[in-house]
Length: 233
Ligand SMILES: [Zn+2]
Image 1: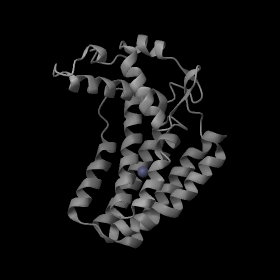
Image 2 (image 1 turned 180 degrees about the vertical axis):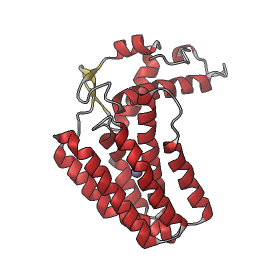
Image 3 (image 1 turned 90 degrees about the vertical axis):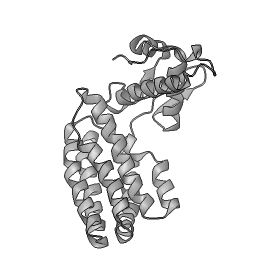
């Protein structure tokens, strides 16, 4: 896979007006590595060598190190002194159960609160976010999958934002749940079925129906758990 923007970040001077391009280079490199991690092309726990990414993506070391640093902050990459980078290991079955228990405790209630506080502006934001997941353009299956994972994280985060409890929202965001669970399995079933469940949540929001929103969110999270459980077989 090649990254389209191949300008070298180290050549960019502060007054050259090319800062924007160097930012987008790091962004492109980040997206490329993120997609490989989410779609398991880079296997959980495996070593990531900067030199091989330099060759593969045809960019310099700098944007790759920056992108890996960002992924480290998201818990997807681990850096060990003198050894280097590796992909974070797969979450354990125990951690998986804990994450879903946490989600089931917090998100259905958050969805009910968000429904009670729903208005046209918020609904438009959530529809836009859900719509981004439904779009199937783009040939690269890995990029599409990783994009879905990110959009799903944003969709759920937005709902918690509209539920109006920052502490609950931060608690969920801090787990980077979606990045870890989508990495359990690279399969279209994970994304296809979730779309209908999101529609049910949106319908409850459109009706400003807290009970229906709570139930739709609970069902979505339970189904998501059931779809991913075979990853532990
Ligand atoms: Zn979802």
